[in-house]
Length: 311
Length: 169
Image 1 (cartoon, one colour):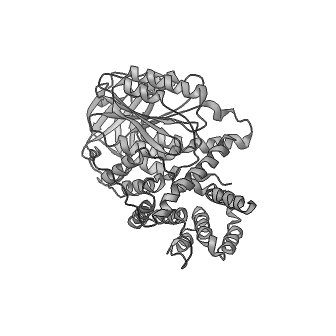
Image 2 (tube, rainbow over the protein chains, first blue to last red):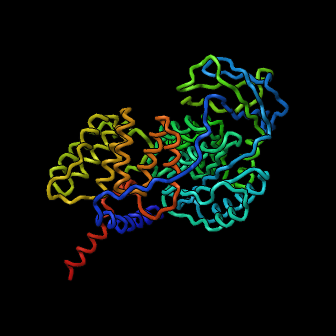
Image 3 (tube, each protein chain N blue to C red):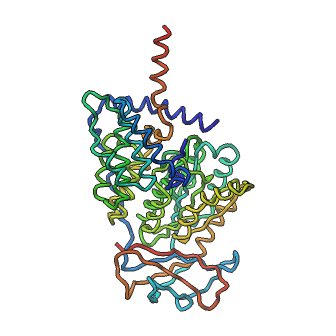
């Protein structure tokens, strides 16, 4: 019923909006944005976020010789390893569609406030909302009060363009300077309804951008009991799993209390390594498949970006 | 009702009946008032059935019949879908041009800008892609015609209600 309500509202609003288009059937000049910094992506030096864990415990103290990294199957020399040195930009991408209301919305507000307080002095947070439309409400900042004001004003309603929001966040995050790490945390109920992006196009964007993307999805999808519903759930999760895997991110499931989940996403990203290397013995352009291992112990769980695209 | 782009490919049960549905759309195309929208929906169905060349043939040229009313939603979606089909056919420059034509009709529409952003990124134009991502995030209150595609002719309901009221008087 809620879905029907917003559909009818959408149709009514559209008629009003398109009356303007009818009145001016000639082209309305497209408004292009003006300035933004350039992308940091380069194949001269490649930076790879690598999480090494034993269960949930971060493995610390590793140095370059502890890692083995191949680019398109060719072993590479790791020139620098950093751990905890680089500041972090966190893009929080929030589903504010009509399925995210009431206590869930309150939990989100609390979780973001806590996340903001957990961040380091040089870390920054960007807040992006989406229902059908994707909108940035706070650009990168360490001003907790600005973030607090924004999340207090959040109102939920409408459909859900998850793939579009994820794609936009990935492209925006990749514009950051090379000396800052980029984490995107996207919260949604997992049901895309209005994106123009498809799972495939989102994956293409993920492969050509630099940020690590983590999804926080509520447990509600796992409450299905029939075989068909479980299959449907697996299909719905698959696009997020692919993007998370490709970017070295993760998927966390939580409905009970979102605050620890958001904190865990930040903490696991913070307690990961950044490996730098200059590709040798491979073509610069095209798709590059990365493989990172820690040969001294196969029991570790290693999470790293699967590849990059050389322009 | 098909729910939007939840899946890129149609379920096999629907794929088996694509030609049946196509016949119905072609019958609808005989009516000038809805011919444009019928072709558009037929094209999108064929695209989703991976029959891209046939879809493209239906989407160009989008010239309305003389005297036929211009529906901005149909005009926008025609360019948008052409962009998607051209992109699928690995014609990124043509796809980008189609998305720009859609944006000329509805500059604040998210769908065409997302399509353009993705094509530019795949072409290696990172700066161009980022400019589109920035534009998407500017708050806007207008409705993206793509969001209307899935709710059929709802956009005509207020006019229909108004007509009914006038008949009753």
